Every structure is written in C-alpha cells, then in structure tokens.
View 1 (cartoon, helix red, strand yellow):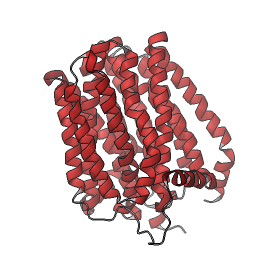
View 2 (tube, rainbow, N blue to C red; view 1 turned 90 degrees about the horizontal axis):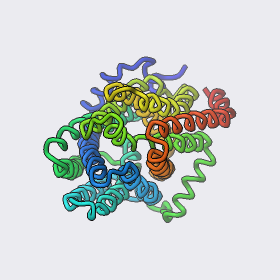
View 3 (cartoon, rainbow, N blue to C red; view 1 turned 90 degrees about the vertical axis):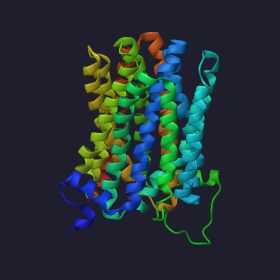
Length: 424
C-alpha cells in the first residue's frame, strides 16, 4: 500500500494546505511575499508601457514588440541563468538580480517622446535578461525551501502568486496609470524589485543541496549539453519540453490584449487593465483547481492535463476575440487562464519532483529558453498578422494551430503514456 507521504490526501483542502505552509514555514513565506510584490509591480509597468507605445506610435506591431523585448532576451540568457542557478548561491543570485531589475525600471522615467521610444525596448530587454538569471534560481530553490510533502502546495502558491498580482497589479495598474500617469507605473515597479530583494535577505534555509567539494563544475556550454542529455535519458522531461513549445506559441496572443481592449472594445488603458486583471484571476484560481491532480501515483493523468491545457487556453482566446463586449471578453480571459495557470503549476511540479537538484536549474533554464523563444516568435507573428488580417482572425488562427499541435504531441507520446501507466 502506498503511503500518505507519497500520495497526500485524495481530496486535499487546498486553502487549509496553503495557509498551513505559509504559517509554518517562515522562509517560504518571505520568498512567496517577495514574489507577490515583484509580480504586482511588473504589471503596473506593462500597463503603462502598452498604453504609452500605442499612443506614441498607433501601431499594434510596436505594442507587441514590447512583449518581444520582454521575452526574447530571456530565452537567450536562460542558457546562462540555468547553469548559474546550479553553480552559485541561489539566494544571493535572487537578491542581486532583483536590485539590478529595480535600477533598470527607474530608466523608464527618461522616455517622454517618440524619439526616445527606443529606450523602452532597451530597458525592457535588460530587465528580461536579468530575469532569466533570477527565474531558474527561484524555481530550483523551492524544493529546498519546503519539506517534500509541502512541494505540491508550494507550487500551487507560487503559481497563484503570479496570477494574484496580475489581477491586482494589472487591474489597479490600469486605474493608477490612468489617474496618475505612466511615471506611477515605473516607480511602483522599481520599488517592488527592491522590496523583494530586502525580503530575501531574511531567508535562512539553504536554497540548494550541498555539493561535494570535489564535484566538477562544467562550463556554460557543457552545462547546457548536460541538461539536454538528461532530457534525452528521461523521456518524461523531453515530452514536457515539447509541450512547452506549444504553450509558448499559445501565449503569444496575450500581447494582443492591449490592442483588442483599445481598438476593438474602445476601453482604453482601463480596458487593458481589466483584461490583464481577469487574466490574473484565472491564473490565480487555476493552480488551486488543479491541485487534486498533483499526485505522484498518477503521472499519466497529470501528463494528460499538461498536454491539453495549452489547447484549451488557445481555444478560449478564440472565444475572447469574438465576444461582443469587454466584460464578456474578461470572462473568457478568466477561463483561458484557469488552464494557463494550471499548466504552469503542473509542469513546474513535474520538473521539481523528477529532476535531481544538481541539474534542476539547468532544466528550468532550458525550459525557459524554449518557451520564451516560441513566445517571442508568436508575439511578433501575432503583431504582424493583427495588422494584416485583424486581431480576431489572428487569435482564431493561433487557437486552431495550438489545438492541432496538442493532438500531434498526444499521438507521438503514446508509448510514453503506456510506460507511465505500467509503472503505477
């Protein structure tokens, strides 16, 4: 008979489980609070920049280019960030990168005219690059900040942190930026990074497992090769990489939210804030809804959810595009990001529970690079297509492509699903 330690309760009380972890574990509580604050500041900034670029250029493509600037450098630097997360003290790495991102966010105060707009893309790219060092360290740190039986709850909370502050940051950000101007968004984002760094100073648990003194420290190229080699040995990880490619392409449509809010629904910055906020509500709830599926004894069901959630996400964005008003579009955004938030949590938990700590940062870095390159390409493609065939047609096309891709991955992973079932 399998133990309760392995399986946990069949139907966990997710709210009690989350509160218990935050109450018992001060180190994870500080880490989680830092995530909340930093994520909230990010969305104040994105609302401000989206409105600024659209007003200065009247170009949907240049708005989506802001998202490309936020994503493409992340994909490139992730190949460095992953190995650094396995070589250096992860806590110190997170503190330093938060401080650097806060300093870069202050640079947006220098942008006022169209001739200075290039600085938006440079600063956004800089924050993205530094974030690619922070994120693998943060993801790889979580299994060390909590006990093994709390890992599922920790992922549920971390996944919901992004959604919580997207809902709060984007929703309130739209109101604050609309009332006080773009500078308010820049300042709040910078302060959020500095506060997150200060909270991490108080974390006392080790953020990685002890390494033998004689252990070889591979260079960056060799470290990346080791992550790929590990995925080739463990086909579960390889399949997750394949799924993330489709997820990245699906998420590309999110860059069109400011365009559809302002141009289709004529709702201005407040409409942008509403749609991003509803996106956050879905991302907040999704990890809690999916928590009962996070069970070590049922990896096949978990894998099924991982494969199909990007398709569900993309098809719900098709529904969003054809809604008759901004409020119904917001409801569709909630539904779409229930699937998106669930998928993030399932994939993150899968990596953390399957991959050894010594290569976990590199796996997260490689995963981040894969999804970011696909997302950046999708952002650029969506921006261009929106100008050629329109926003609604673009979102519809992405939904169809992602659904077909999910079916392809499902078909190709048939042998893997059988092997997973056989090991139950």
